Image (cartoon, rainbow, N blue to C red; front, side, top):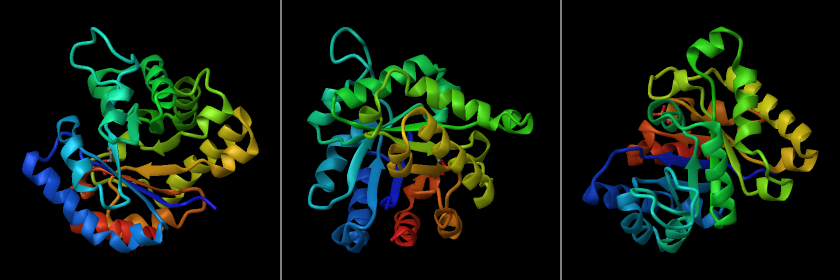
Length: 254
Ligand code: PGA
């Protein structure tokens, strides 16, 4: 049985005060979920607020993730943050290959693969994001793109290492647009991803790995999305900035 997983990606939002306030509201509202241990809950604040948010959540079982990471352990890499630095301040997870990093910042599959690999080696749990652009969906290229993101993103990793990874399927056209993939559209791709992971590794890994959906997930569509057999949770952007909405989504995952 895969444990449901709800992650909030705060992107470049909040400030030193509102990040801690949001974390505290989520922690107190999610007490029941945390106590029952029935849902994995993670928030991904901006780098500069990771430490204060980690502190605010220390008494809860809510995990903290970074939105990005660099692949070198240390050295002359101005502006970058290493996996060991993230571990040092209590981070457990990190997003790798989010569509905004791919399409706004210009990250390649090769760079993302290095980040996933370095995260695992450094003891973090990466959430590898994959997903197609609208033009790619319209050209019936969804499976091709997802296959490329998965195979390149996980290149060189053994099944044992990949068991540390969570996959997030995020169709780019659904991110921040209010357009959600229908539960059927999302399920189709999730099922494709699971089968592909079975071929790339083994059936047990495919059965156990968690695959999240992301893209305009909200309290009013969360239950139907998570009700699909291959959707194990949600990676939530906009709605994770409102404590009540994020808590409502966690509630549906319980
Ligand atoms: P959204 O973002 O929920 O605001 O669409 C999801 C994401 O980018 O992870």
